[in-house]
Length: 477
Ligand SMILES: Cc1ncc(COP(=O)(O)O)c(C=O)c1O
Image (cartoon, rainbow, N blue to C red; front, side):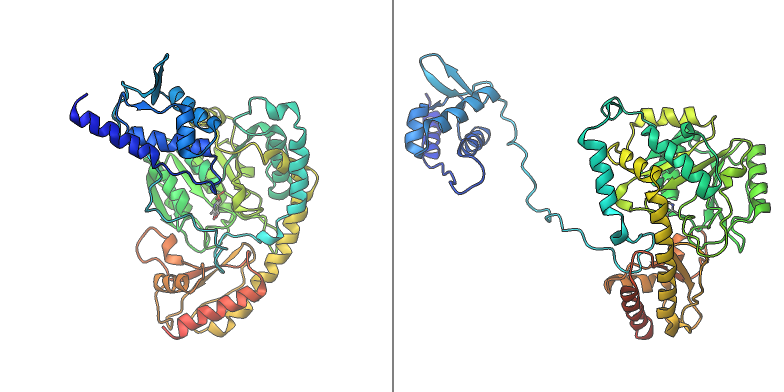
């Protein structure tokens, strides 16, 4: 043994004796000892070939039971850090790669923060306190306490069949859209649906018309898939259909309520859009994001209900009707798009969890969902009135008008408003409000200035306080 080997063997013995185990720790002693010995080996302080004391000796030196030391040594032999030689004892393994020490958790990252409540006036947030928790728990428990065999079989990547049937029935009643359950595909939300559609139905470089303004995650999904976006500024009647590019491969539209402005695409434009798509051989993606919440008049049926050529893919989501935490949405695909979408799902693997699907299927089939929607519709209509009332003192700075539908108000800034919408949104965020700048949804130049104010998820008191905070920001910039 060379002098330096002798030295490191001695320092190893010293390190062994000074090992300290924490008896108050929740980690069992044998595990603490395993980790400490492993560290000694990996850090090089326990040199290859060094002999360890016997398990009995080690137990005495560390004042622990022999079972503790035996368990730790056996574990490290099994992992290959130590080796035993018959009749000679236990040694640090010779052929250990002198790799970097085991990767530990980085120490400088901030600890995860507890979830914060949604900031008042955040758009797209339903009334989460009104989520039917008791019903939901009952349906989940029923589905999973003694799961039926189908739930334990290989899941259908297109979703749980009874949920697909329940969605088909819901769409016929609420959106005038007749479809077969086989056309319904369950996803983890509209964002995943856009992602799948972009990859399954288009090739990079394809021209896809979109509305301007539009839902940013949709724009993002299409851009990421390499599609050439062709934004068209919406006018008082929604998408200017006669400006659609002749060679478009697709169009993404929100015909029931253009997002976020809320204009409804009139029937002549709907028919012209479908006609254009049929002639161009293009797909039309209909994002029907909050049509269930209409307060006056009858909603126009979904665009997909007029689609005789089989070109429209209907996209729906439970994020606004139930909760964004559910992460469940769906698509209704015309027969010719089904195999393409199916292939894309098979390639990427389904993302929607099966766990909530049987509960949601039962909730819908037994009428709980329809009851919940009616209850929320009444509540949101009241909340919209409460917000309009609370904003009345700001009439010189914000144009506030009732909206026959939806979960947010879009309020253009008047010329007297002293701040731009981005500036207001930044100051509002610092004051704890979740409102958005209208211009942030636009792509092209000269975006109109305004505020997008979500009311559905907040009670009248919260809305009144939020309006007072907003008034302070606007009056005392
Ligand atoms: C225009 C629009 N489409 C779709 C959705 C739903 O998206 P997801 O299902 O991914 O939560 C929203 C929700 O905010 C939306 O505003």
